Image 1: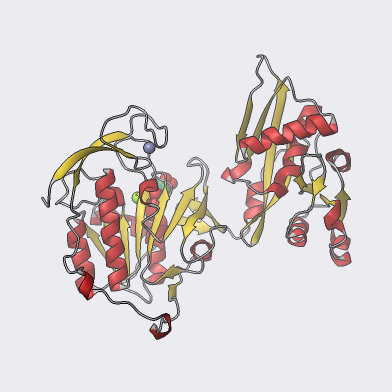
Image 2: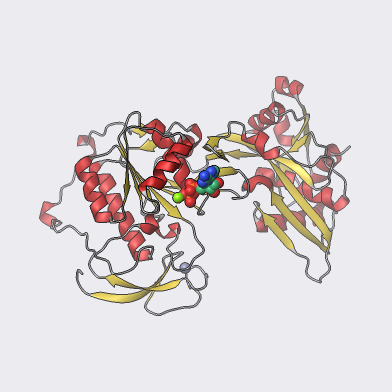
Amino acid sequence: MAGKSKSVYICSQCGYESPKWFGCCPGCGEWNTMNEEIKASASPTKSSSSSARGLKTYYLNEITADEEIRYQTGLSELDRVLGGGIVKGSLVLLSGDPGIGKSTILLQICEYIGKNLDILYVSGEESVYQLKLRADRLGVKSPTLTIMSQTDVQAICEYINTNKPGLVIIDSIQTMLISELSSSAGSVTQVRESTSMFMRTAKSSNIPIIIVGHVNKDGNIAGPKVLEHIVDAVLYFEGDRNMSYRILRAVKNRYGSTNEIGVFEMLDTGLSQVENPSLMLISGRPKNTSGTCIACAMEGSRPILAEVQALVSASNFGNPRRMATGFDYSRMAMLLAVLEKRAGYFFGSMDAYINVIGGLKLDEPATDLCVALALISSLKDVPVRDDVLAFGEIGLGGEIRSVSHCEQRIREAARLGFKTCIIPRHNFASVSAKLKKEIEVIGVKNVYEAFASSID
Ligand SMILES: Nc1ncnc2c1ncn2[C@@H]1O[C@H](COP(=O)(O)OP(=O)(O)O)[C@@H](O)[C@H]1O
Ligand SMILES: [Mg+2]
Ligand SMILES: [Zn+2]
């Protein structure tokens, strides 16, 4: 082992380090996540050639950079989230709960990418036979795909440097091991050092590497959060494992926006892209029921419709319960206060729950109005009409404020067969007459007006 080493306690979820043990991590507040690890004082992989005399700088003008080279994956939903494809020489982390479909999607894209590039798929979790069975099930036959069952990071990096594949997939980072480090596979030290080593390999060889990182609640295994700052892009695969659809989103991207989402459905034959996510997210909603309303949120460049459900019921305890899934909790509290103070809807002694269907997260103020209508509808037990869609930001004065991308949202509503769109009064004038012929557009000033226009 290199250099002196000392023992430290590191949180597996957030990477907080401390010389002494805590039951509850001071960094992130999780319990039983502090593990003892031996920290080598000198990184085993440090190169020795970095004396100041060898350093070289460049004038910006003398650097001729080629255009950013991107590889399309054959899945346009994935390409969109990546910002237009996998960038050459980048390190991408694909993260998500076990069983969500990370290995599946990565093996699937090999078929398309394999037409142009040699691919190395390294699995530390499955044997090559298991991978073959999976590839057969997914219909992946690419002759340029090589598979390796290996966990030794140094050996893998050496292989990459000599054989120079066009794309490398590492599944998963928690199984990778640098033998010189004394901590066990999956520890924060191992996961971080392995990632750094793959990062250096990706940069020096200009080969893109995708690594899989499991999200886990197990306190002994490092979560993907501890390596988000090392990599170029972090994609999260989300969704209910019991439901068939999955949402892919970027939480960090050095080469693109982090607003875009990709929607997939898990089938026997693998993940398939959902071309019309709005339709999927609002299908199966109850008819003529109080407490539901359809919102239109901009996810990056696309408008996406989602169903918001609210349940308001008399509270049995002194302190009413409030819960929000897919919507910001404090924003919900603010909306309840505004509705009470400015519009005379009393939620004081009521429990209130908000749920956004389909695992979507609504973090845009433009969805305020929809959430407010769902709440009022449940409180009054009067359903919002099925063919009504509403958007608008609600101010503290109870006024409905204008939002961006107004026409795009209305067009999406019209496309999916909605009859009425309730929008902020200030946006009304900017909507073209042509669009107003396709769908009834109502401009409203306050919540009271909005609710009156949305019911029978
Ligand atoms: N033999 C199979 N037939 C149909 N679906 C399967 C089969 N094996 C796995 N799956 C689906 O694939 C999912 C596992 O995906 P996987 O890519 O292995 O997840 P991850 O790599 O994220 O842990 C399972 O949840 C299941 O829905
Ligand atoms: Mg897997
Ligand atoms: Zn922590």
